[in-house]
Image: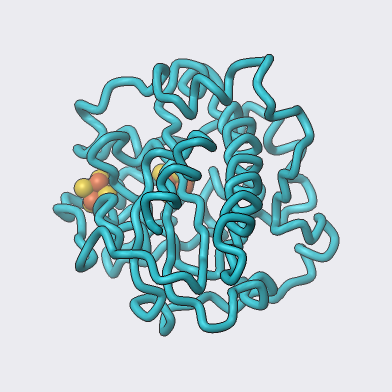
Length: 258
Ligand code: SF4
Ligand code: SF4
């Protein structure tokens, strides 16, 4: 059964993924509208790691939004195929709007360590990656055990220009420069911020992290090759649902702890 799951994941260009039991993260769920999409009787969380350490992203950090768009289409097509193959089971995907703490879940899956930067530290991509989530009521064998943490060198905390990171492990997203320009931001000026050089790619917490020292580039990774191929099936619009498809207006009206 899981051989078929791997086959479907790989056929949709998803190779870097792991699985943890849903029960491991149930007491950490984030209160948000997308929580309602979690399948009843959920059993497994599949975390997919998408690399961003490419020449194009280093040249223009906003290129990551194109990668997220393609990733969302891959997740959508994958879940459609999984629902057909395992028609008694539910599969729901999340990207910008995960009700699961994605970094912790990915670490439970054995995909890397939780950094004091709040980022996943993948052994392959360091913190130059993002995480897609699929939650299902199908029982899929786990690929990891416990959460692991970084070496706490504190470089990201000390060097953060906005004071967004704290030694207690907190991440104040309201202060983070990068967050202000992301899809998850509720700033009415998000679009302008993304266009403006002022917020174009604060990557300091990534640049100083020792986990990013020897990671190389992922330009030849299958995901990147597909995502950057203008002839691929992933169109410019596709099924990307930033902010969980709520739209800017509804998203901005959500409570602050969303
Ligand atoms: S992206 Fe920049 S502002 Fe945000 S936490 Fe990292 S160093 Fe701080
Ligand atoms: S810079 Fe140091 S403290 Fe921050 S995530 Fe990396 S290893 Fe952890």
